[in-house]
Length: 310
Image 1 (cartoon, helix red, strand yellow):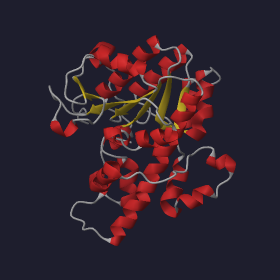
Image 2 (image 1 turned 180 degrees about the horizontal axis):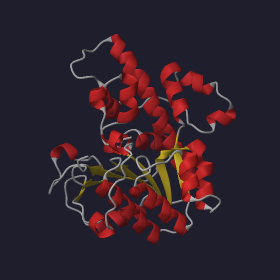
Image 3 (image 1 turned 120 degrees about the vertical axis):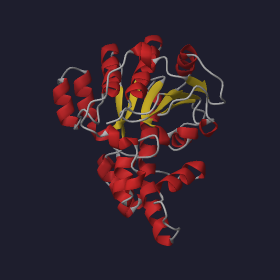
C-alpha cells in the first residue's frame, strides 16, 4: 500500500482512477534507482512534535522498540534506501531483530524461507513469488539481502489477495467459514477500526464530486473490510514474531496503514497489550521543517522528496 492508500487495488475495486497514488509507481516495471547509504541517512528528519532529529536518535529509538513500523512510499528511491539503511543499523545492534513485509503474502512464506536458507536462487524466489522490478524494488531487496546475510527471519506478513477480495465481496463471516488451513494465512478482524483512520480512508476514497449516498457507503464499507483484513493480518504476523522472541520486528508497510498510529498499529495494540511500537513515516515531499499537516504523523517523520519523474 502507499502513502495515501492502497491505490492500485482500491481504485480498481471502486473504479476511482483519481485515487490511484504511489502504489502505481510501486508496480511499475521500471527499477528504482539505487542510492548510497550515506545519502539515505541524510534525509531531513523530525520528531512527530516538530523537533529536528539526528539519525542516531532514530536508530536508538528503533532499537528500544518492540516493533518498528516503516511507513514508506512504494518505489521511492530515497525513501526505500533510507528504510534499508535504518534496518541495517538496527541489525548491527540488535541480534534478535527481524524483518516483516507487507508486500509478501503469508502463503508465500515457503518461497522466502527457501531463498533465505539457500534452497533456491534469487531468480527462483522471484519467479515463485511473482516478484519483479516493480514490486521488489532495490530497497526491498536490500533489506531481504541484509536479513539473509545476518541469518535473520523475513516474514511474509500479508493476507493472500484472494481472501482479501472475498472479504470485500462476502464479508468476514465468509472468511470464518474457511478451513483451518485457509484461515492460517489470514487474520479475520475482530472489529472494524474507526476514528481518524476510517475518516481519512473515506475522505481519500470518495470520488471527487460524488455525493454521500447509501450506495457509496456500502462500497466504502466493502473496501474497508478488505483494508482491515490486511491490517489485522499484518498485525498478527508481527505479534507472532514478537511472541517468538524476535525484537525489534521491523515491519515495512505503506504509510497510510500506520500514519497517526492508525490501522495496523491499532490492530497490533489489540493483539498485544502494552506493545512498544515506533512509527517512522516517510513523506514524498521536500521540507526543511515539519509541516503542520504532518505533525504527529509518526514518532519520526522523514522528508524524502518527490518521487522521480517517469
